[in-house]
Image 1 (cartoon, helix red, strand yellow):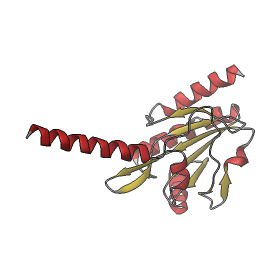
Image 2 (spheres, one colour; image 1 turned 180 degrees about the horizontal axis):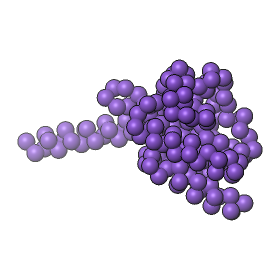
Image 3 (cartoon, rainbow, N blue to C red; image 1 turned 180 degrees about the vertical axis):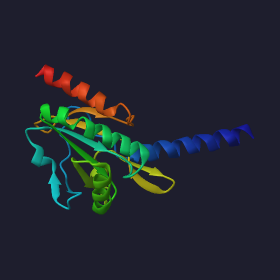
Image 4 (cartoon, one colour; image 1 turned 60 degrees about the vertical axis):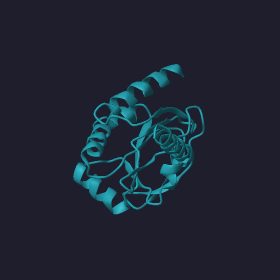
Length: 178
């Protein structure tokens, strides 16, 4: 009986590991940020290339109008002037459609870009798709991209209450190294 249980556990572990190995991994620090073009809450195409010469805080989040995502967005909005002083832009990405982003920005007073990745392509390229009970969401990951398009910092499974403060601190430290 023990051999059967052990064999079943080993098979399950192998299946999990092969699934995890097949999942796209986030790009590493020091690599070029994957390029993208997605629609914003204004239904305008937004590309990473549009931000050349600026720092980009590219943050992925699960869903508009949810508590953690709202808190994270509010904190980025609260600190927006500090980011702008550092020549940085905030760009949020979720799998929600343009209309959802438009309503979310209006309701929550957000003035930065939220991009709709309804096809999951960009979120996958950034290793930021998760499955919860059979539904796909963007994973709560952030990429700090320098003005030349290189990823300088990767944040995985971030904590919404302190995330903007953490990114600002790292941005300040990275700027000091220039």
